[in-house]
Length: 122
Length: 108
Image (cartoon, rainbow over all chains, first blue to last red; front, top):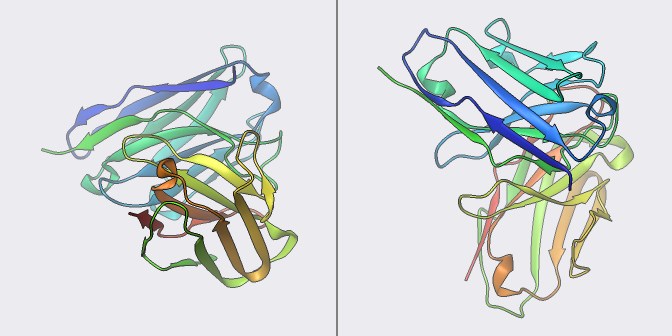
């Protein structure tokens, strides 16, 4: 079964850092682009970042550029989101999602994890 | 950035009725790079439709997508009790940023 499972969420103070992980199983991880999508409490979905299968192409939404870093370790079937300088408005459930192919072209999210909750509060 | 506007915000219907959800883009989405997702409370989104009209694996044929350019529609032909949820459209035209609509809640 194709699955992705996020971890690493928690309560963190504004300005601090947190690293999320997403472990993939049931598919050849290195052959697929991946994404992070978040959902603030009671709000809609917001795409955060995308990374190609090799990790050579990475994109971010404007609000996290310079603060968040997406990476992947294909030998460990794991996707990461390093979040620095966290803000209250980063509070959300963060989902890891798989794309349909290797590139960040024609990319939609076809398999989603259950999400991990990040709360930024003093 | 392409802005997606979904309407209506809330759709109040009964089981067995037909649901028609709209997603309008601020600029043309070529190659029909439009997807639809269903989300129930406490659950992650589930892919229903990609490429504007292609059903994802395992999705019942009562769900159908149509449209092109700037206007897209998700239709649920006969609502089942499990279909009451929030529905989002996503555009993945060209390179990022990819954007979601604000969602349509289908309620009883």
